[in-house]
Amino acid sequence: MKIIFATGNAGKMKEIREILGDMNIPVLSMKEVGIDAKPEETGTTFEENAIIKAKATAELVTEPDVIVMADDSGLEVDYLNKEPGVYSARYMGEDTPYSIKNQNIIDRLEGVEDEKRTARFVAAIAAVLPGGEVVTTLGTIEGKIGYEERGTNGFGYDPIFYLPDMSKSTAQLPPEEKNKISHRGNALRAMRQKIIEKLNIK
Ligand code: ITT
Image (cartoon, rainbow, N blue to C red):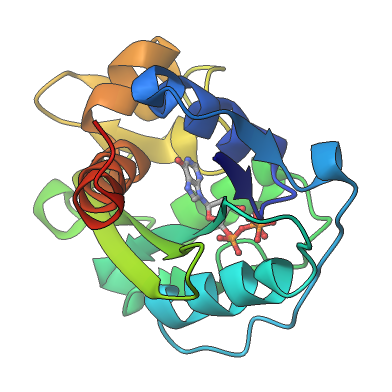
């Protein structure tokens, strides 16, 4: 049995390896197995897009006993009507540096008081099991948009995603601390549990 993870995002892949590290099933990226599926993410929800990505890669896998997983995730800013949401990677253009995307979100919240700066990261995980069944899980983490970028860990919008209880952004947390509480950690731990039950793994 092995897991092939359908992502081209190196920041995600690093976290996925750490979170699923104790699962006793090898986790390989699509790159490591020589698959490069890039389906159009036409869904309107994180779950729909995670399923699109997992299925597109599963169609290219020829070996048996493989679980194909995908992650679709993003940042929802309440004051911006939940933007960028499913467009988080595409916001302001896929190749635009995150220093610019992050500053743009800070600028759009200029003058907005603390209580209205609420936001969350959401991650949907989809898995195509060896028999073809598709299962999904969802994880979230609540926070607030900060007033400046802070921290260098993580990736993407982490430097502006502030955790009031910890007085830190998720980019200021050591990776293992972020994974313990993150949207991706929560969704992947729920997926691990579902898979253990479905496939009767000890
Ligand atoms: P794949 O589709 O290949 O997995 P992607 O980066 O295009 O990679 P998504 O469409 O799911 O993936 O976009 C997710 C985006 O949401 C990601 O590029 C970040 O901008 C943001 N994001 C998701 N999780 C995040 C996290 O933990 N920290 C910071 N930003 C995150």
